[in-house]
Image (cartoon, rainbow, N blue to C red; front, side, top):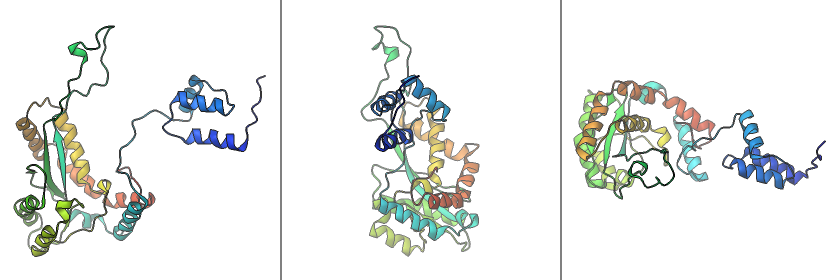
Length: 283
């Protein structure tokens, strides 16, 4: 029989922490267990983690949230938790997103010794990839007008977007005084005094919005759908990129269904945000 390990309370706590830790490699866990007088090889660690249904995955990327940010998000969620799907369908959700010509994203190549720098084994990179920023909006009525941002979106250009893209779309979506609410995030160009004055002058009601909350904006999921579709084609220049963006936005067979589904998920998003106490959600 092997030597029985008599772990001190501190060592037991350390072992428990290792089980909970998400970022340690198998080698690191094995080494730390040995430091705690527990003999476990990397192979044993790998097998035990598999038995416990742990598997290696890429970490989800979410905005870093401070305690104050979480508190504001939670307060916002509680403020709007009683709104039903019909209300959220009358909200015009807006946002900007950047699309770029993607380079070859191959993670692995098959090569023999001495072929590391063979042209077929090298992924070329560019210092400044071609990219475009797009603004648009969605509501329960569908997808809105696209706008290609010129350079950096500042308040004057944003007012042009509101005047020439948003307002005509709102008139089309919500005619004859039909109620609606406009959602925009807290980007500087959105919250500038001149922009607030413009929206007030045009009688456009704003939805209060918490900072660092892309998971609450359903248009973010629509952008993700678009980026997946755009990435499927071999695109070599800005014109092709814009043509693909416009085509997917206006003609993708799942676009309208995706928009509706994402907007209808708002009550669930808010419920998830409350359950997370203002922290990150799955959305």
